Length: 102
Picture (spheres, rainbow, N blue to C red):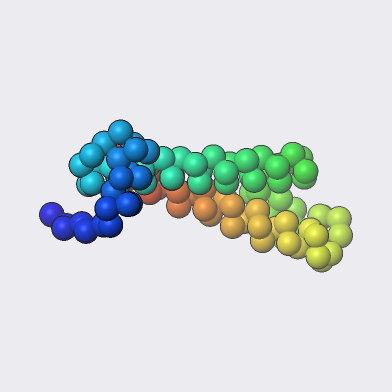
């Protein structure tokens, strides 16, 4: 078992946030909540891109590789590609982390 040492103010905040006074349990609960929040945020970013381009990232990437995306090399479109790809990877990462805790 890992020994956890945290400051008293942090312990009080964790206890108030989670309703749990045991530090190990409070940290796990807070971590799950943070992962759910991050997942929700990244899902919203993905939905915004899907709405903007009318497709999912896998389709967008295929169209990108086939040179059928208009203004492919404009700053806005290229930036969207990288941001969207990052959001998709972050979603996978957050889901995997959450699955490890559940």
